[in-house]
Image 1: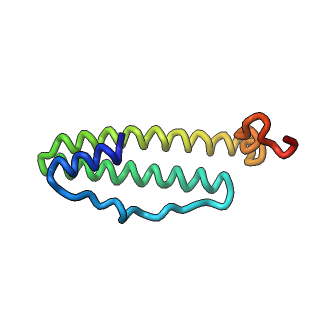
Image 2: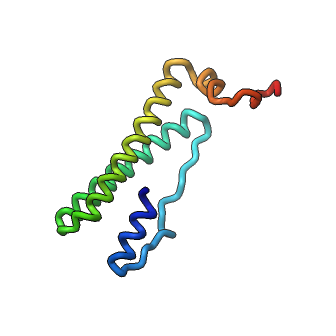
Amino acid sequence: MGIDELIQRILFFDAVPVVHALDPVTVGGTGEEMLELALQSEKQAVAQFNASADECHRLGDHGTASLFERMVLEEEGHADWFDSQLAAVERVGAAAYLAQQLEPGQGPAS
């Protein structure tokens, strides 16, 4: 869901999707910073998709608005996950959190 459906919607209107003009990805230096940047990105996507849905409704394009509204729900789920991961880092500390993310056999002793 998401970008593929949006591209299909653009093609439905005989328009040309422009996907090369996406914002650059920012990568954090620590695990916690990566989670914070990802959360910020998800919140920005929610705001943009909500604004896009509102504009589509204003223009009478309720089909595309519905697509953006579904995308909002998906991004809100992602934001919630990143928020819960940051809460876990705060609870147990960064080192313990990161240690829990390792698969068995992936540690330095393996």
